Length: 256
Image (cartoon, rainbow, N blue to C red; front, side, top):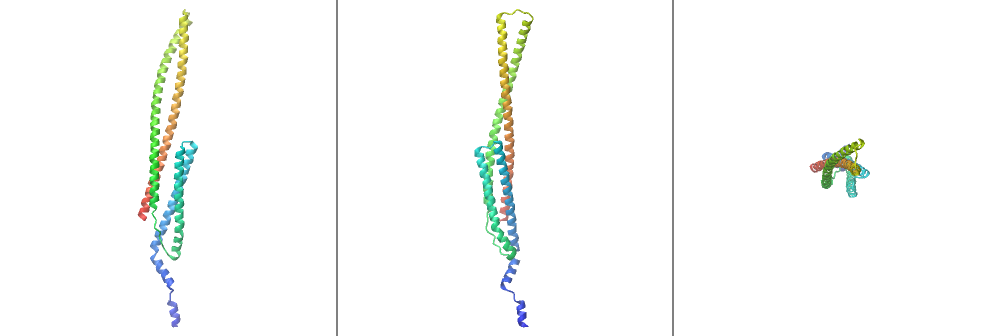
């Protein structure tokens, strides 16, 4: 009877160690699970950013607005996001065995990590990209203002040509009326009428040319306006990405 009672109350040391560990480690288990969840969120965010950047690069390639150097920079940025996404997935795989072992045996070893370093590098890269886009947008704005001034000058010149053409037409009509009314005109008068007609045709050709130039300037102005609008949209997207990354850096810093 004594032997059976002793056997009933004997607990293996491994079981005692496991029970003590289970009671001491719930906070660490929750902390590790929180870190894993944050890694999953970060990976999803990076994958969305990669898809957005790939879509932007594809749109710019299709529209022909992206310079080869700019394409290289955009592709380089996409590669950075992809590399970081792979890095985060590797970290998640490395943490997964730890989570499984904690759930079964509650053994916990949290490796030291400094994710804000990579985040800070991405923020700096995005800031540089924003500065470059702002410089390009400023250059386009200056070009647009120049074209606007040229457009205004062309309009004024066309108005002057129209007034001159109207005066020439009136004079030609007057001479033609006098000729039709039987007014005797000398050879010099007929030559003057012919000269006026030639000059009138020249003025019409010049007016047509200026009108075409004005139309071309208006088309170029519309194109530049669209490019500036696209640049502003891209800048807004980049700024939102910077804000998201800065917020994540703050969250990582607060957690770690």
